[in-house]
Image 1 (cartoon, rainbow, N blue to C red):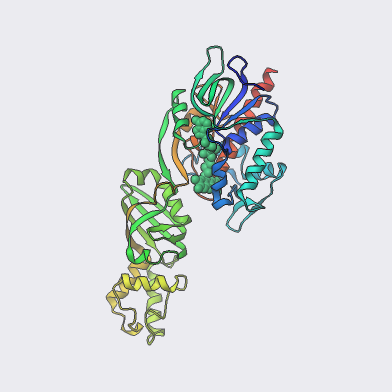
Image 2: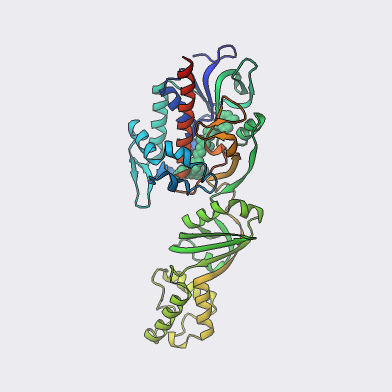
Length: 419
Ligand SMILES: Cc1cc2nc3c(=O)[nH]c(=O)nc-3n(C[C@H](O)[C@H](O)[C@H](O)COP(=O)(O)OP(=O)(O)OC[C@H]3O[C@@H](n4cnc5c(N)ncnc54)[C@H](O)[C@@H]3O)c2cc1C
């Protein structure tokens, strides 16, 4: 195959990430003959390589398409359709058919059996090669325009003009892809970071960095919007991270951006006991542990001792006092801290820590059954380029597999009809 301006290729996919690979492979396996995958960097699938701490969290064991869609702060409702055609079970089967077994962890995340992201890369590259997809790296597309006789012309760095009947944009969060989509008539919802940790003004707490606590309630009020999450948090040297914090940041991504990452966060460390439960617990401890010191007798078994001691410091009470001598005011202060600690958000985690971008091509402009643009027929879009993003746990890749697969099938259907 020698791509040129005069002989149009059937499908040109821009972006060698998971969405682009899935679309290219699916189209080629369904009979589309000339599929060219253009990747701007020297190596495709780089995000897959670094994903999941080098293990690649490929998807999440969530079998009901409607339930699956609830894990997407942006795209939740519209994704129900694509997920009813290709969801987690289909992704597992797809990888299995292509020689990669996915294994479920107790929390539902699914990883390759080899526990290495390299296995996912090899699987995708092997499938692309076997189905006849041509890959060109160092091919940064800078312009896509509609060809007067049909199809599209692509140009860019390291690329002569290429003519394709169909074009798919799968450029992830890269700004160039959003510009290409805009030049073809699309509206782009401004991108903002999602899935980040929170920087807090709480020195006594951040002294406990490295401690993870389960069942922590997070309650964030920004203007008239309220965001709540419960789950595992990790105390870092800057503030809070861990799954519940990341989920909170994802659902509150736009509101936090608008508030310049400032706000008040209420944290409930009581593991669901609430104020009444915690008051009773402290009364009980005052009676039963009367002769022991506050520091030695921790009433909150789910909190590591170091953290409990930090709460004593925050409540301004001497750790070496005996339980019998705990002043009533300090007791109330402890209940307040444990059930609704008020923390001031000072910013988000350092730049680059976010795993995905919220925002992108507006979903209403894409037919999600086929991933074809409603603005520009013959143009397909999928993956992070769209205004879709999920929480951590494999959901972001799942959106890429579903969108890529739908686009590949839709392109194949066009060629089947015309042959
Ligand atoms: C550190 C990290 C860890 C992550 N871990 C997970 C995880 O475990 N599970 C999960 O579900 N999600 C994870 N994610 C999110 C996931 O990686 C993304 O949602 C996903 O990669 C998006 O896929 P995509 O195909 O849309 O875009 P990308 O993976 O970003 O691929 C787009 C490709 O297009 C290329 N490109 C861009 N513009 C052009 C152009 N103009 N011309 C040619 N090529 C171009 C880029 O170089 C890139 O290779 C992680 C993200 C990060 C950053």
